[in-house]
Image (cartoon, rainbow, N blue to C red; front, side, top):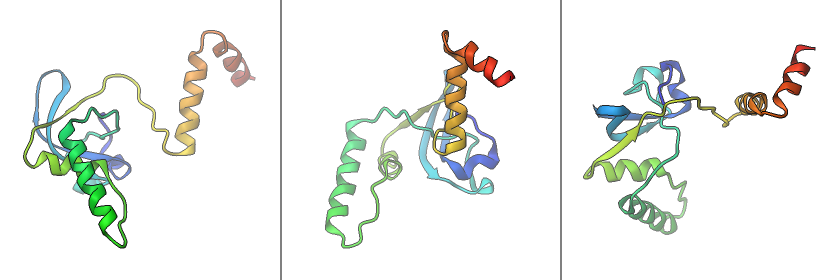
Length: 132
């Protein structure tokens, strides 16, 4: 999803190797929440992943390392994608349309309000209430 550069510290940002037709991007990895001056693109990796068995294998390897360590930390899908991308093609698709970030209370409320306004039965009730 396209994003303003100042928002890079809120999202994973793909490293784009090639922009193909129809919004398809060939990527070599994802950098988690970089500072704006360190962001390698103006796209946010926002989820909705289609992952292959190779990425699942990378997650299994992370999980195995997690069990073997005394202070294991976390298992990250981004790390698995990055490891897989070192020897395989990885693609991202630019999403067309509206996207709502529900990772914080204010944006979650905006998403709820937008969907409520669009509801065929209750949208007019909410609009009337907002206009009071």
